[in-house]
Image (cartoon, rainbow, N blue to C red; front, side, top):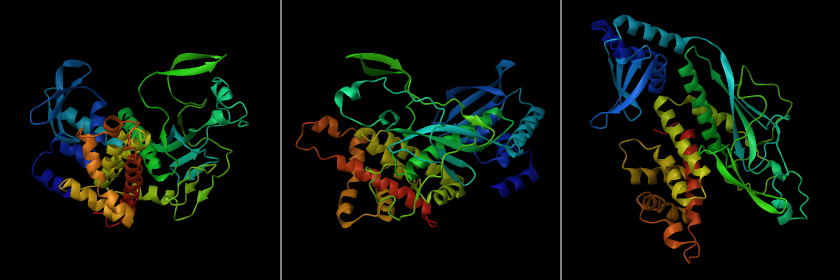
Length: 411
């Protein structure tokens, strides 16, 4: 790609998109940089091609440039009358500075939730840290009296702490003079690490909350039921942005060195154990090229959605299936490619191989509206055995994504 651009620059003046692609092949970064100085408004073109017409804030009625894209790929940029040659040079120079400058780094954080508590801190390389909430975080108790009524003899004093248990995920991210580019990097690193941890930790890692707005919540107090409209979330007094990892007195968390980490059921364990392979797996994730990284992070996003909504068959099964499909080449016949990846990485036994052959058909029935257990069979049904489908595709999807990541010959 770079050689092609270099040869062309000798013969003719490069177009603005080609000049930006000399700086980065990441179209999301180009899009963020264009948003730094312009306001964008979207319109849909023909043949599936979409256009964004950018206007300068001081000349809202005049077009600076039109950006065309298909899917998540920019296909062209056409300068408007206001985007002169000098303005283009200035845009490229500012983009170069924002992408190549050494502006240092900062640490951003997000709370994720686990089925088991993390009883210590874990520093992964120099870019990621996991730990419980800081000790001065206010966590209330006793607001809901229902548990005391349901089990008056319970001696558990920490049931208000979870599950689910909050874990503070802190990620180191590059700084940039471009606020839009910096925002992209921050949100991208938080999302990618969050989704990857959902895959790599055996703990049903979930979102701190689903962005659906306030939720009605029932509380049992003073022998009566109350209803309150609340916004889900979790926070501590220290905010989510720091120059470096804040000091922490938490002990180093336990790690698990067994080869059966992803084959065990951890329901009865008292704490979240971290696999010793986590650092290696995250290193493999960071070593992927742009195309492979896009596939893998998209697969992790679908997998994380499946974990979040695993109890809802019509969301969980298609999400886990989509996570496997993300690894396929675009030209691959989906059903055959799906089965090939499952055969290669799914670690199937003679017993599960027969069941796994039906997984794609189960997914198709749900996606195309042919069948849904919760609707067609019902709760009180003799055919009340479909939980195996969600459990199997969840297990197989996890094995496929990790196996693909570990496979140096994955292409």
